[in-house]
Length: 363
Ligand code: PMP
Image 1: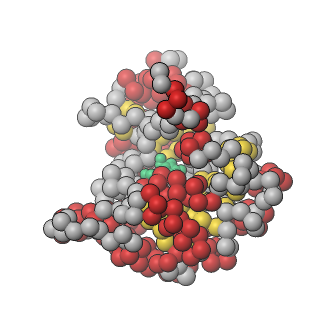
Image 2: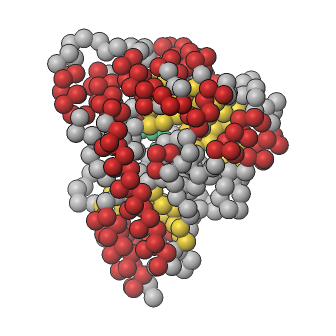
Image 3: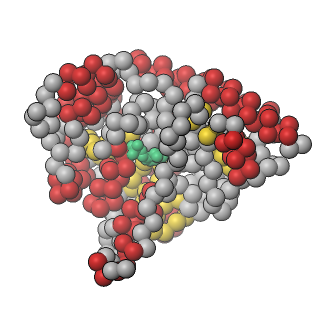
């Protein structure tokens, strides 16, 4: 092998492995936190109209979309120059890591159990990652971060609500974190916030070090379109734009801009879908508990649950055989758990039926 073609960092890079995207139909797919409902009916016509202009380059600044997002968050005083958009929040996170967390070898702080992409970006950009253990109650312990502090770190990234636990950190705790890191950017990844968390967007105009990242993949049913965004004060957005322009000055194509904008403008549809998912989640919670599961309090579109008598891997395999796909992480402290995306009530029933078959056969 010609190992001299790449650096040691690339040779040992471990890319993020997303949840399985199966090629067979008829699976009950509850493994990657997609929305079971289609996007707003306004999305496809808006994209069809945009398709008539594919001959032309898209708006490099995605201004109409950024205006629609700012308008949605107007109650928090958000203006379009505080919105940065990218190809899925994964790309937005990549730009943010590149822009804010490269600090001469200082480590980026993050929970030990969280979205595993954070560690991949750290490797990619040569940022040491320092994990901080979740508290015994699965909460992010803000005091543990504060004890490390601004001086000895490159910043903080957390998911709130956290993934894969689903547990939310109250806004007062997020504020304490911001106050403990005045010299560093604190990135709050709110991929799941629309299902019950408290958004830190309300704090953006009070904290110069706060960057909040959102995605349209979950609550807006647009995982296939690849749109995410960050909200922060204009100086942070400008730094992200400098990094972005160096990679790709046209991050969003015409279809993505038009579809995402239409989704943001349809507030009623969004509210109905998210409320339906929250209702289904609470019903599923109760039914899992009846079957002996411990379910962590979820503020997301998934639940994180374990059965005291059965290994997570065994339940995962038994469900898979019956055509129900959930997520299992073979990691310390969470190997007993399954992460189950909330689908429709029919999906819940299929999951429960498959679980009952497994529980009856293993008694
Ligand atoms: N953050 C978290 C916490 C996630 O779970 C996900 C979805 N896997 C993402 C970000 C990325 O979402 P997307 O790139 O689809 O916007």
